[in-house]
Image (cartoon, rainbow, N blue to C red):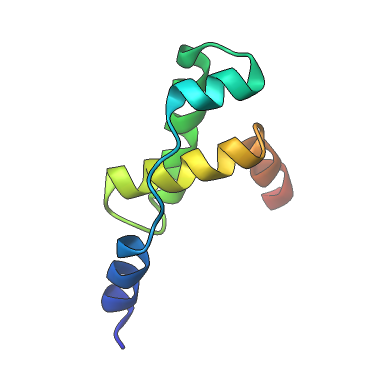
Length: 78
């Protein structure tokens, strides 16, 4: 299986994105704050996919599990 085919397979099995409102409610923050987190997360995830929607979906799951996921990831890379 080629790499591009593998990526398409993975993308087709993704769970739907977690809504901004649900994330905001979980962490008691504004939707605007969630949007800022998703913007950072999607930028990171675009290293793995060219599709913005897929990148945002992946980011929503990471952020829902760990609010500061991308800040921790950045520190880990330093």
